[in-house]
Image (cartoon, rainbow, N blue to C red; front, side, top):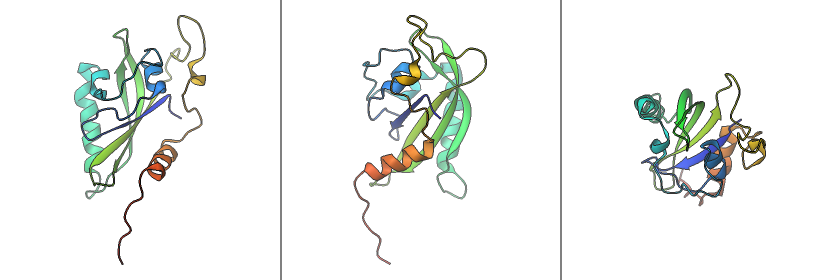
Length: 153
């Protein structure tokens, strides 16, 4: 289960605001991150590793896109690094360009940041998908996208 999931384009720019990502990054849930590069929220020291994992999944095995999971970090609004598990599913949109669905789950070492340090409220109730499996989210998003042209046999 992910604490946040976000759709990004081939340049890793956020395609649509996701309140769960804002919450994970300790921004106000209404802070709109649409159009911002996801790499902005990866600490500089961790970007090379993040990029390598993304490239590896896009290159895949024998040229096929492959889903992956890896340990990483995000940088929150207080400029603190937060250890996360990153779930990455690359896919091609209707025009054939590679897009990415990236999910984040806070690493479970020590106390988690799901509880707001200011009000004590559990953030899992604020737009996070605790029961979602990342591949189900991808299937739902692809099903909601415009129909693909059928291939002639």
